[in-house]
Structure formats: structure tokens, C-alpha cells
Image (cartoon, rainbow, N blue to C red; front, side):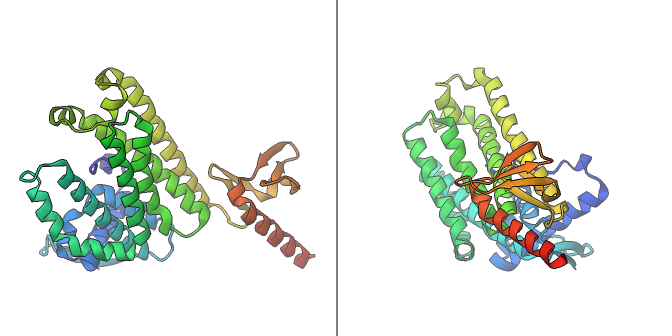
Length: 321
């Protein structure tokens, strides 16, 4: 399921291209430094995107010029270095290992020998990555186990299959600090993962039929998946739009003043300067009135944080008074 997230280089400015290249090279060096030279061979555009979104706004990222081991005669290139890039390298290796394991399961003994051989080469690298990211490895195993159960029962529940894979990608956000940013990033990766699963199922439709393998689209439409292209386009486009909305929210939150703007739900950020009334009497939520007319409600998971923010604001006003 790799190879679907690629940079649209023709739509990027030179500065954006340089930033992408620095992340690509930085991830390559992180893979080599943490998991050995062979790990560099697993580098893909998908993993570079993961590294970029994990490292965005971290604050400790920096550039250093390093020579490319694949092209040692070229000049050293600027490479992004930060702790989130190391986390992305670990998660990339975990995903690669499980993808190889899935390939082993999908092939017979003799046709699966190349995948067994390659997987064996990465065994130590995978163990190091799993030790560094045990939560992500456990969630990946759990998600793949759910997928295997659906495949074994030839389940027609397309949404459950797409959800199982999407949850794996969403777990990559668990290393990001800040509850608001972590949840928004998880939403971005979740909907992107759902889109990837649907696209992969569509592309593999004919091959899965020929080899008698499970395909969630084929099971959902009982062999008539090609005749339901409109349905796939609609649901896939919806997933991309939700991923885009999460990305925009992430970008907006990074630009806003944290002392004036607070997140009250996964999809809403409020300007505290516009709050004219607060109702704390409700159970499990808080009602805020904006400009004396608009009422918004705080999601249960953000209630504690909002109360702390409001109390902090009162203390600051009292100190100034």
C-alpha cells in the first residue's frame, strides 16, 4: 500500500522543493543512522510525508549538510535533523517490516521466498524500531490482525476494512506533543490512510480476482466493483477533503497566539477575546457565547484544558488589576 503519496513538484516553489528535499535526505540519514545502511533502501515518498507532518512546528529542527551515501561524489546536501524525524524513521521501518510479512502471507512457499529473505535482512532493524516505538508497533499489529479477520471472513464491510488500516496510520501521531495538535494530526493521517486503502483496493481489483485474494471493494459490491466507480470516487474524495481540513486546522493552530486562541473540539478553535459569556453549569461540557449571540460547546475531552485556560486568564487579569 505504499507509493500513493507523492510530491506535486510542478506545483511547488523552489523554497518548498528545497524543504521537501531536506526532509527526504534527512529521513534517509535517520534510517541509516538508526537501522543500518540497508534501511535506506526502504525510503519512500510516503514515509517522507509522514516525516514532514510529524516534524512540522517542532521548533528544534535544524539543517546540516551531509554527503549522500548513494551519490558520494556529489556535494553535501542540506538535511533536516530533529527527534521527530527519528520517530518517523522508526515508524517507517515498522511499517516496512509488516508490509513484508503481509507479502509473505499473500504468496505461496516458493513465490514467497524472496519476501522471506528480504524480511530476514531487516529483522534486527525492525526489533530496534519496535523497541523505540512499542506503542506504534502494537497498534500496527492490532490493526493488521483486524484486517486479517475481515479477509478470512470475506467481509463485505468496506468501511471496517478501511478503518482498520486508517487507524494504523493515525497511531503515528501518538509521539507528537500537545493534545490538540496530536488529535488533528491523527485525523489527517486517519483520513489519508482511508484514502490509501481504497485506492489500493481499486488498483489491485483485477489482480486479486485472478489470484483469488480478498478485496474489500469486490466483497462490498459482490463482484460489481467496477460498476460502482462513482461510489468509490465520492467516498475517496470525502476522505481527502477531511484530511485537507485537518491539515488546514494544524497550520492555523501553529500560526495563532496560544494565549488568545484555544481549541474546543477537533474541528473548532475559539478566539477568547470574542467570548462574552461562559456557562460552566452543564454536565460534561462548557457553553461559550461569542459576541453575545453565537453559542459553541466544548468537547468533553477539552473541558479540563479550557477550565485551566480560563482560570489562567482570570489570574492574569487580576494581577494586572
